[in-house]
Amino acid sequence: MSVQVEQTEKNMAKLTVEVDSGELEKALQRAYLKQRNKISIPGFRKGKVPRNLIEKAYGASIFYDDAANDLIPEAYEKAYDESNLEIVSQPKIEVVQIEKDKPFIFTATVATKPEVTLGEYKGVAVDKISTRVTAKDIDEKLNEEAKKNARTVSVDRAVEDGDEIVFDFEGFIDDKAFDGGKGENYTLKIGSKSFIPGFEEQLIGAEKEKEFDVEVTFPDEYHSDELKGKPAVFRCLIHEIKTQELPEIDDEFASEISEFETLEAYKADIKAKLKESKEKEAKAKKEDQAVEAVVKGIKVDIPEPMIETQVSQMAEDFSNRIRQQGLTIEQYFQFTGMTAQSLMDDLRPQAIKRIETRLALEAVAKAENIEVSDEKLDEEITKMAESYKMEVEKLKELLGEKEIERIKKDIAIQEAVEFIVNNAKEK
Image 1 (cartoon, rainbow, N blue to C red):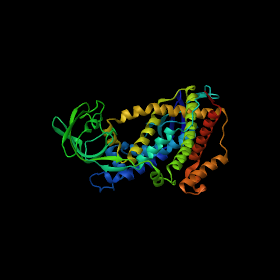
Image 2 (cartoon, rainbow, N blue to C red):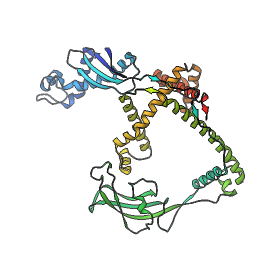
Image 3 (cartoon, rainbow, N blue to C red):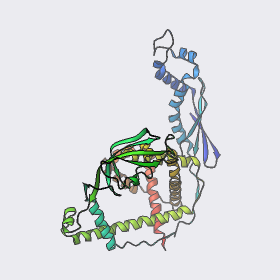
Image 4 (tube, rainbow, N blue to C red):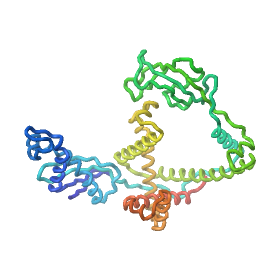
């Protein structure tokens, strides 16, 4: 296999990969073995037709797609390593030549890591943040704990904002029910904005077991073409109305939810923990301000494929989080009125900021010659092994060289953050 690297434009490159004809022949044979049970030719049983007869009957290219898909992943991985490029996007693959007894040739167009010009990163200005704990802070924490320990009780009154209801609904457009618009014994928290705009507000004041209508208009950017911009009527029937009943905040409350016997002792503990929390929060805010100031000062030309790759990764992470909450991404789009494209558009600014931040911190680490010692790397991997309940050497083996190198880069970036913050100046 051979690889040629061509810089096509700023921060973009094209890898031309050539795989010898012998490897192509092996891939074609594997494709034949994979597909032969699906191909029929008169006079032969399925799975028994010789490859050369299939190629004569259907054309030599019948196995080309499968062979190419077989060869490309491994060949690209080798080309990636041989190119010595810092590739920061998924490759755009194009087959140039695939023909029996000839080398298999394809190109991979990729984005490469852009150069960064740093601005000022020593002595950036940050706000002085107070870590004082006030009586109001303590009262808010007490109320928060009271809400956590509240009892959910059913009430015989009309719906109020913040209530939780169990109800049936069915949606109609022009007096016809539409798909996906019906639910039975559905639990909804009023004010959660889980439904389309205007729906939950109309439930306030409704009473149990009395049928009523909610009139709304689907957003113009709604994911379903059949529903977007359409006025709809939802026929609703509430079966249960539930609210939160808060406990009294006194010595008894303190003894029930904490290790302390009196409310005053519990308040003192809350104050100490709030102080620690505020100090951590102040440190994090200082880091954010300092790093943001450094990022604003950089000059960098980020290639579009790098942004697209970051957006796709963030969208996949978002989809996984939604699934962990018991919803499919399609259901999330239906409830919120978003689309895949609008999600991508929303994520794009965050993706750019994430890329700029990473590039800026890598540039600071390089400028300050920040290198990660073997001791620090081992310390980090040991922490990971403890969290995974694994032996350190076994984890190292599973991680592999590339992942360990990524961990080293992450440690160097955190040290770059610490360097920036330690050299920052409070306003």
